[in-house]
Length: 303
Image (cartoon, rainbow, N blue to C red; front, side):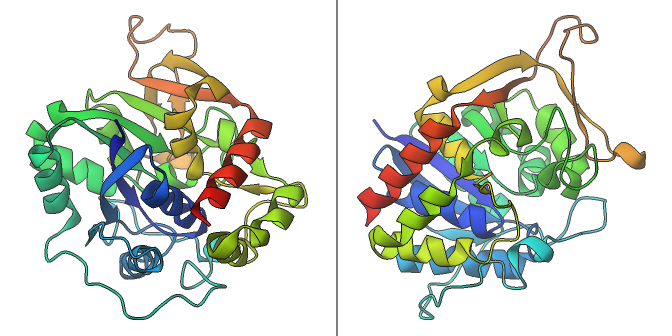
């Protein structure tokens, strides 16, 4: 039976690749896309999600969410994703409308009405998730798990300590990690290893209109280097399908919300400070070759 998903996202180029797979992969049943301010402002992330659903003629509903973090001033990633968030490809302009409700309301309705517990896949700042848990705490028991892109046990990409999604709204991340819902952290420890190689990039435009679209976006992606491009958000879906490709460790994750370490995810790697309790499964290593092979096969199947 396909895994029923909700994606909470801020597209964004690597988010676009994740949404592409979530919409089309037969083992996923994508129930809802909610958007948040992150890579670009929420009006643009919502527009980008609608562009992708239109590209694939998908009926998955889209709801716009939080325009800014809970407390911290908003800081986008235009330097990485461009002013629009998804430059490089001319998408259709006859787009559907977003749902006439906030992301939090849509999340609550879809989670509570689902016939089975839903898997949440947040690939942007966790602002919508935090607001959902604070406003409607009853949803927690109806969520199977959260597979969250974000965080790092090592070096960050916003500061030496902090990864972008957590840095964008550390207070929301703190609420999510303290929620009691099962969480898997798919952070920079694996996403900076699972790079799309130059060989993979060369093959993409030969894989139909989906490959052509993704290749065009990736050519405007301000992340990565000559060794390859990180597909941070896609790793969440790869984990759901192929957990055997990951090395994980259970630990307690604390989130720093002030000072120069703002946005740092601190793992109790020795189990020394929380009486042996854990609140997350943390991905610490990945089979990068398997990731590249799976990504190409998946895009080729979409066509």
